[in-house]
Amino acid sequence: LQALKRKPDLFLCSSLDVKAVFQCGVLSLKFPEAPTVKASCGFFTELLPRCGEIAPVGQVVHENGKALLQAVLEGIGGQASRSLMDHFAEILFALNKHCFSLLSVW
Image (tube, rainbow, N blue to C red; front, side):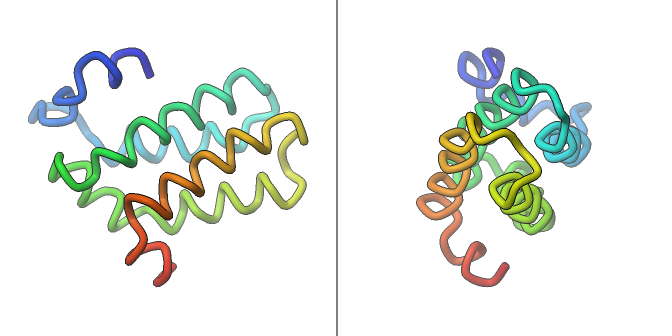
């Protein structure tokens, strides 16, 4: 999360598998440990605003965003602790603000 805040062009590195990082983040949203889920939510709230400016991120969000949305809705639906709801809401807000056309399709 800190690396993404300080150096968002990290996702332009040709050797970085953006899809794998994204999928790890989605899986981390389902972990039973609240600090892990909180950090994953923070990762996505920093990542999603960049989907329009960093092409590899935009492509991965376009192709895999439905899995993110499903994980968020599962968490809100009872899989995650109630104390994490604000963090999941931040992801929904970021999806709505930065990926609205995709969100409505998913």
